[in-house]
Length: 190
Image 1 (cartoon, one colour):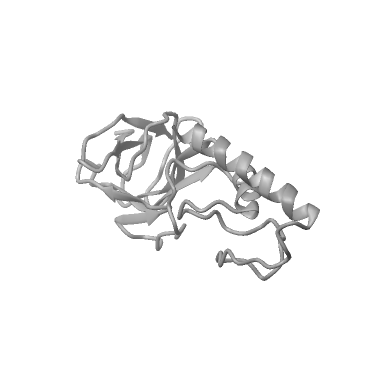
Image 2 (cartoon, rainbow, N blue to C red):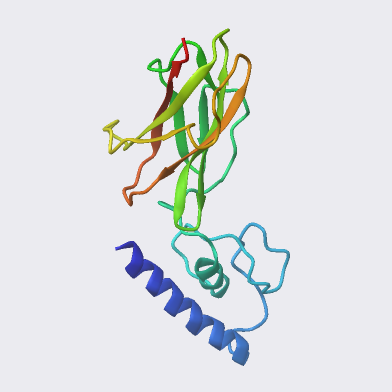
């Protein structure tokens, strides 16, 4: 359904763009889109209200696809246990190892790739030889849709006391989710 909508927007936008170039639609930009400094620069924000314009069609084909129209893309503050970005909220659960702490995390989408990036800190006096971050995307009904994880083996040999590790959990699925649970586990050398 989403690809049909995109094709319709592209076709409608291309037709409107062709008419605009031919001078049949006038020179005013009455879309009221945020980010427009006047004129038809082709860099307006994607219109999520359902009204297609020539600029929307151009932006639609150039912009990375999102799992769902999100409105605002705001980053979370570093060090929070709960984060929201691009309309997707994340929560650190109590399943995490006490000695390891997720100090920041943020959902991202870049083209066809989406996931969660963040930082784990070792808050203990012991070194960890293995650290794994787990991610469980959820839908509006709080149902877990799948589980994903990434481990530290390729990035670091160990995570010593007060050291941090930056992780990136990629989500390789096409389901739509609005939130995720995230937690960290690990093994010490002792």
